[in-house]
Length: 342
Image (cartoon, rainbow, N blue to C red; front, top):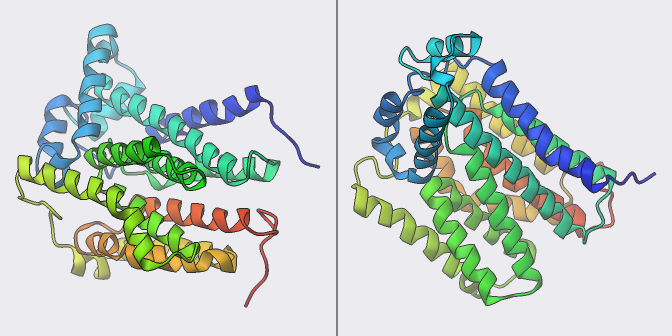
């Protein structure tokens, strides 16, 4: 039986479920990992220097949201459990500022879910089954689990990632100049948010390899999106300075001796291998291509990131998941009935 959701039920999935998850992760968990960034002054001291200073979009959204909440609510005068949670994570923390994280992340969580749905809607030619709804629900439920580190730019990065991939897939069906321009503009904005926008370029290259396009044609097709990323990436560093322009700290040795960081590496590899294992043969070539093209990102994670922060693997896992789904959309195999292979 192919259960179809009504528009009202679909809205509850795309809107209510992300809100539930962000409430749980922002107010149900207490992050002992993220601390000292939940007031305007402590936030600026963290995100106005180093590698973080280039992520200007997300920081600006948090600061502007805090202004609105400070001016139009009495959150900072409240004394309750939520206030104590914020003070636990930041002695000078303000409830309005913490709510700014929650508000921004919730909005982008909803938008990222919406465009993940639109990707499914596009790939399966509007034939949305209950199995595809299960994928949407899984996306909304699983992604927040990786985020015990509260940052201002992850959920917005997933939104831009899904938005660009959706526009890209639409453009591949019917090439339009305005869509190409919109993709470039979206990449520019996404790069102002976080450098992981480069993984969208990796996705495009992997998709073209999946389509068995010639190398010369692939180069032509990714040239403009790549230029949009490169121009924004280096433009930010030109205007804001090249100090910590690529990475901030050297953590390669720590990542291979710390038990927690080794756990993070294991977790990333486990999920990548799992997605590869359940993929159709038609997708595996694209997944391998994506991993190869994404090696610069992987290298930066190992050299400078804290691999225990599972969220660092999430953008890669998201795009690998979409490549896997593309394989099912082009085959005669059910979206959940994977072939058994050895």
